[in-house]
Length: 206
Image (cartoon, rainbow, N blue to C red; front, top):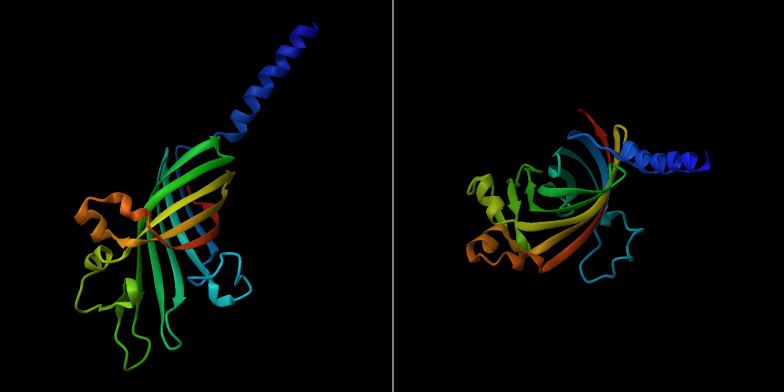
């Protein structure tokens, strides 16, 4: 009798985490969150009290099995008189560690910064690496993507019912999409220019 009870307990201990942690095959969610992006040259922990180092934005993500696509949008202040939007498109792997309770997210993508017309005298442009600017009338969006920096991502996520929480570290590379693809030196993307810590809350749509 004691052996049977022990066997039942062992089976329950094995099956319970699986049933609780099982995640759906398809997940499309909308989310919002905050990102901490300190100034270059400063220690990462410094500057958290400075509101200029924080970004707040939204995102949409779609996951099928282990493959995930994300689009993140952050309104940003480019100068005292100009505001724009940072758009990050990311393809990633979502690898479950404990069912849906904890998943490892590893991905890569591109970040494009677009600055619309802010005043009567200003013109819309794309902000490129090293302070360069490209007039939106002179280049297409796909050309701006080619000249924009590569972004890498490492993080963890959790899904509890329809709610998801994701903690990520976004890394802006010193290389652009064009420079990496043109030279076939994909490892050059790991030359990191800037890091951003992001926390997002997501709501599952279906």
